Amino acid sequence: MQKLGDFKLPQFFNYPPYFTVANLRILVVHLTCTTMLSRLQPIRETREKQVQLWKELILEYCRSQKIFIVGLEEEFPLFSNQVIERSLSHESRELFLSALVSEGRAEWMDKSHKKCLILWLRIPDWADYIINFVKQNGLEDSVMTVEDIRTGIESRGTELAGIDRVVLMRALKLLEQKGKAAIFKGSSTDDEGVKFNV
Image (cartoon, one colour):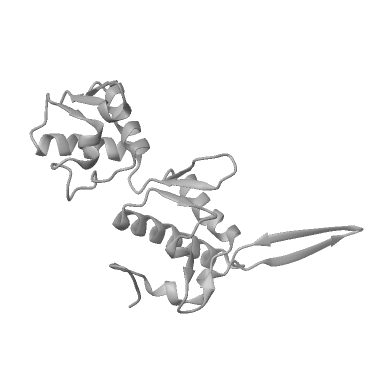
């Protein structure tokens, strides 16, 4: 089985059709009008399976490697396979990331769709994870800096270690809205603190 570092790639990763967005052009001639449609695989079930497999692979890989941002125009290890000499086209990359966006598992960070924030846990799930982390570590009614949550001793070996700051702040703000946390502004972003009320 092929690997990317310590990540085991699924079998479909070595199957060339999964790197191909079939660019079928269906010509519909009606009087003098010609319409060209571009689609993925022509069979709906195959197309849906292709998109589903790629969504799962992107989420699993990003989670295992703690990757939160995928650039559409940047090198990303999953988007090419040197063994079979295949790469996803820009169109395919955008399609698979857009499928994650439509499910709430990613968000475009810009209007031009060049960078995508991957949410292998949705924001409410991150908020729940933080609350469980606080309870498991006896941090109820304590104050922590945002940086301690991301890089502190307690977070080592957890999903919170190295969490993207944007994702963390959104989860903390959700907890604040629910009355489970209070965020304190510091003189710099490193000084921002959080008091948990669990």
